[in-house]
Length: 249
Image 1 (cartoon, rainbow, N blue to C red):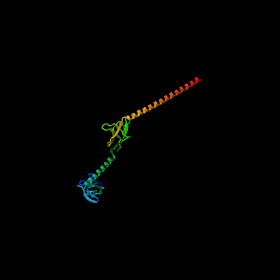
Image 2: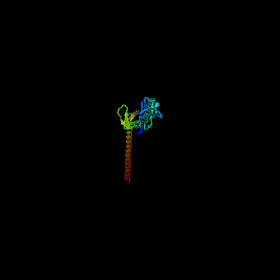
Image 3: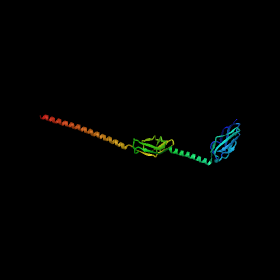
Image 4: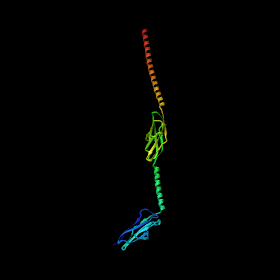
């Protein structure tokens, strides 16, 4: 035989309680003989009796701390207090609105920080005018987060790519553009013009250089032949004078 002990209160339903709901508080205890007298208190105010305390159509002013008292002929014991937080529907709507706003805000920040390539442009090394056989280098740049790692090069009016990588060597005339990619999307640049001049100017230079070299060689050969001829002529004159002197003697 002993008085009540291990007195506790359970709430049903558990979780958030909204104004208008029905709530049940259940008091349990260990006692011998079993407790037959149960009283309910909100704060220090008596609000009901019985093992089960029901609140139908609960209101916000029903919020507070509740505890039960279990009694048998050997004594009594109070449970620990449990707290009821009753939320009105308007408050729920406000909380949901704030929650959705926070989610939207973070998604917006993420969209600002993680975006597809933009401001894609092509930089041309040189003037974009080259001679046949040479190439001009085109460099693609973009602003993206994370940085674009995949670049494709296209020639206008052609569907298939003509190159890949951040730089591209153009060997022929045309209008070229690049397309930058990351995991959030892609964007293309404006086209730039490359003009190839078919090597007339270079050929003229080569021919002129060749002709000039040949002309110098010819001049050198003529000069050498003239010197040789002059030396031979001088030797012949010296021999004739010598013979003439001998005959005189």
